Image (cartoon, helix red, strand yellow):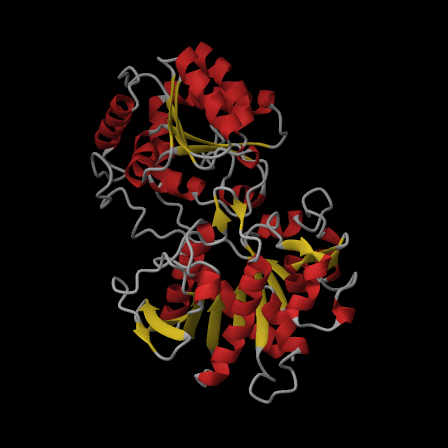
Length: 470
């Protein structure tokens, strides 16, 4: 089986978020299952041609590789990609993003024929690649080379849909009839994500719970009806975690490497973290951590509301992240108000992120919605107990800790209110006082594995189903 991955970002070449991690890691896992995989990506200015040893095939195409033998084809077009930023600058999105990614989609399909890469499945990721399924069905369908190719469209975050003014529709080079309620039209705008959902052969998203949630109007971002129409072709597959990179036994970025048996070494990481954030060094005080974007989706307001209660309970909290200025200011002010209990680092630092996962006792993740989420998986890998809202991938990976039966791997609240969140924090604080029980929970958390191999097996099943439904 031959698979082409299409994504606007892929590690190690270009990254703004988790999409790049998935599209750089999943192809390698599929390769290990015996699939032939290749990848296409725009040649952005940030791609280091020398470092990645890219070779030029012709005026428009360069090639590099990932994994053992996975070719990555770069589409070189100075007008669209030779600029700082992938989607925009600090001032906003590039105004020509529709043209930029339309060009990428059409050139990707042309590249296949040019290089005689006859693939079975084109696996598209998010709105930037969402034109490819429509092009296969309506532009390239009469050409023998493309006739048997099928498309899978993966939604990583439904909130980002690729919306553009309807006046830009002709730039898609598709028939006018496809700009309608069953196509790209969305409240008098062009919606690329909607086209990907409507015209792909199969739709996947990054967790089973999120696949169900987005078919409900409350979480469907206006596209729940389109997803319900295709419900028999929508499936959720949980992302995996790279345990080679996120491994406390070998992690070079933490103060002390440790294993499930080394509770003292984990405690040393806590001490290091307290010093790093200039908090009082106290082993008997529970330390809560947060790593991520400072945004409404992530529940920063809920954590800020809960903090005053946590201070009363003599807990410490550290925040690491960057995002909306409103939330940055809230956290800075709280750190000034409660210097012995709360500290924040505004910005992102890879080493410090690893240290927060390794040194915290508990990890806060009250996201309003979370398509998959990796932070809760990383927390478990580092023996740090997550406290999460029951949504999306968090609901699929975290089970409520039952003290009497000693089952589960974290704390989970299902009503999105500060009171419900604080209730779970209080349970965590009670557990912190019961050290033997906490120690057993921490040791058990190391056993939870969310491997890319398992995800790859499920994608392989989807590809087979896609080809069988001809």
